[in-house]
Image 1: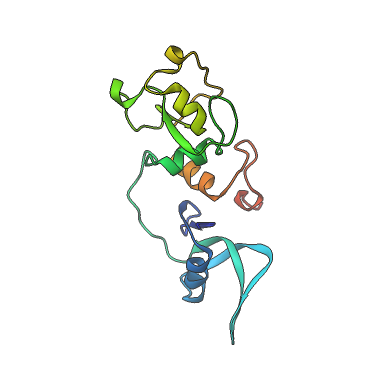
Image 2: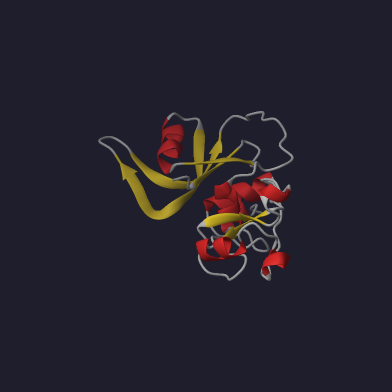
Length: 167
């Protein structure tokens, strides 16, 4: 379960890690807690630490520039909010808009989240051939969007409060 966002020393998002790993980084003095989960604390014999939601590394880590978010089935489900692109119900599978047998690949723009029933009904056809309509168009998230989406739902027009820069 990855629920803690790790920011570089320059406040750019790097990764999403488990709360346990985040606490370890804080206790090793490699990171500071930028925002904690309200009311939750981890207690040990001599230490009490807030459960972090966002941590920032103390030292800058140089990472290679990533222009594109890597494609994954989990990423497609998270991007689409676990909602079927054909009917809007809960999605459990990933459907290829252009089937792989017709030359479609595993890309952000060719895959959508789908419920098992619609995925089976569409089968080895395009949505037009199956007489089905996409409710939402697939899009390619930026690497930063992919990280934020992995942490949970958020409104792209109004980012979380911890993301705003204090004046």
